[in-house]
Image (cartoon, rainbow, N blue to C red; front, side, top):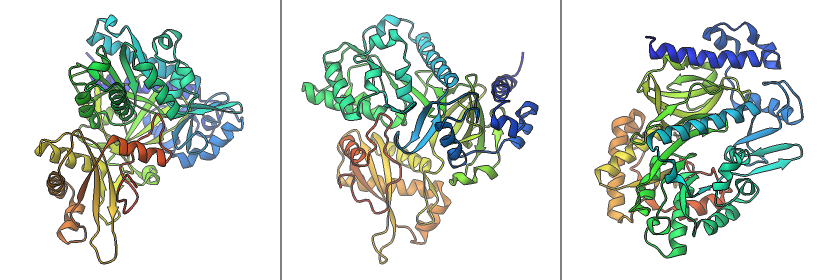
Length: 479
């Protein structure tokens, strides 16, 4: 019997070989001699690592109608990776990529049905909150969830409380209000959205109906399919608002670059990595926060990764991305088969005062402190604070709790966070010991605070998320 690691190598090499063969006659194919790549070392040596700044000019050429640059043919659809449809990072979205996305969704559905074989339990209305897709002349530019909705099969659209294609044309506020109105009296069974917006939907539905639990509003709700932000930050809140319901949660992990993994075991929090769907993966051990440093860092193929090591991701895809840097940090919980957890963002680091604190370390410290005090938390964000030249700089944490907390609890939480960070981060500990960094403070925030902040900062969209690091000296999300 073949080793699972050998199978991973074969599967991933098959994906890469298909990508190379398809792109041989493109401009990058001729420039990098893709036809004569015979092994992973050839691939590493022939093709440089690309960040968005490296491909930005060619993306503009694609928009202007130049064909066969990174992938055969013209590209007329672009997924927004950051910013808005008018600005930000726009990544090519090809027909082959769209087919891969549909295969990914089928894998998610089939995996769920293996665990919950009675498909009739989902017979009812479904609610999805897709992003927007805008027409720019002969181009379409939008969020990846919008493209998913745009090309959803007809039978799936018939289950929705509102036509997904219509939703892709609406502003976020109009979309949210329409869905809430349509869903209130529906026999809702499934919700698909970013978890932060599901939380807001729950809160607004309870206000609108004057009920105390989502079980009274949607008694037959069975499944929440979440992506975009870390589900673990919101799951306790969602479960609390839905007391009395036995909800299943599926987390999908994807990006404008491609879908990577999903919950294939409802009893586990780590994710199954999909390695046979048009993407070749490479990993950067212990990635540096400066994305420009990616090109000088060691890379390993998926069949050489180890558990317990933070990795940055590179993706080569059937949308014409070649060794493209993804900004996330993952850690493998298993290598055969590959399973992983998302730890944070490569450039999510607090280093204003030399503390070199990764945000996944901050998450670990917060989780540990909250568990110690028997408190359930949601998301969080941190602002570096230096109010004047006469004060010691420190970190101001804004933390979302499932229940109201007293000032004393916030102070105790700050102490526990501080203790844990000094244990796990040497740079932080040295600065605390030498009084170069003061003790942290913790403030409580609500989802309403977060939503207002995102609206003020033009981040109120279907894939909007609160950044983990706020501008220096941010005093309140309410300001």
